[in-house]
Image (cartoon, rainbow, N blue to C red; front, top):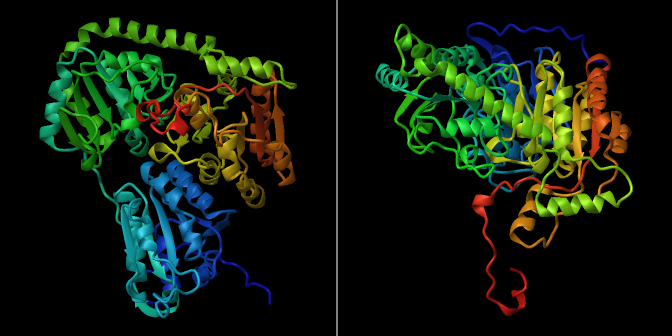
Length: 602
């Protein structure tokens, strides 16, 4: 039997109407503006899925549900709207846990829809049965469990409302038999918070500290991106003549072309940003939780200013003073708080006004010195990396220094680009080289740090913003976890450019074996096939790059094919085995062995 002609209707019904629970579920998503859902089809929600298309909702099938949840994350981070993911009860749902955890630490409003075992067999250990609420309790802001089929619209609406109000993932858990109930239902209208700047007292205290600051520094965090507050952050920085540093992995929170921009803090960040931060007497952390990994010493510098007054502004009061001791905590929206501070400083003579030109010179000098160092930093200089470079000089074929590659990629980046980075040694070194002009352009796995993040996240981002060039970075280890989503790109016509750094090792952990375990390598080596050939076998384009002069042209060619031909391209870049600084020097120590048989393992 042929499928009926699809007539789209994006208008949710008004007032009380008789409908099935599937209809209530779908119409509540329509009311919340849902147009795309990522997942793999399953019988648990098939009755609702049957009416996605006439409701104007595209269901995007993926290769693996973890990829679906990452795509929902990327979609929400680019669009500022909900990202939605759904899967079959049991294994389809459990496959999403890692990606929802990543979305939690990215503060992404992802709605994880988890159909579960039917109520008539729950607790009997039936097929694909699992207790799905505990799986996500650590990584969601709210968990809605539909307790009666007549309450389907109520719980669905609440999960969508809470994802935005709590700024993070929520879970909607639905017994699969509840989709078939009928009731008289009213579709709730979305409720959105009107966030304010924070309390008058805290804002007055913050303004008073700023007025007395000699060397104020602004940290522009993820809240600036999510709150669309870049222009307000710029205005505050220009009023103070203050350097602006990006919080860790939020390189898109301030335009790199602005004279006050100094680069990111944290692992493999900007030395200019760190040196200027060390001089601060007042730090304004705008929309940042000041996460511990993003403020650790780096490049041999313990740059966090020990005696500075810290003003922390965050929409979540639980973040205020959690990691760093603060002088003033403002619980407010980054945009509104910045405007409130600017208003309080208007017409006042600030202590820092007298040193504006001198500080501008210092900012420029530090930035120029760092750029010069980056340009001249051709390869890593530790003994292990030098040994690896010497060894590979004897091997057939060409292998490129990762830092040189990253610099060439940076220079070839198109305007309005979106970039995602995976976890790994080369990807983390990229933190020094990724600069952006607009927010919602840079995506990383944040504090959860899971491999296999970058590529599916960028697929979701591309779906949300098809007019923007989309590029993901991954090492060969992380790439193997996510490369099958190339099929999603090809099948669903969502073109993305993936840069794969092929250095035949798990670099980040191998670096620990170099520094702490006397180069005793266990499970760190990778014997890989040609990723470019695999890409071509899946219907994408594959390009091997082994000459430095080809890096930029290859990226430009891939972006041209992405934007003009709808083609996904995998750039396989052959890299040396040299390694940058370890992630966790703070968390490891030299081994101690007491048993005789392990005496040589120190």
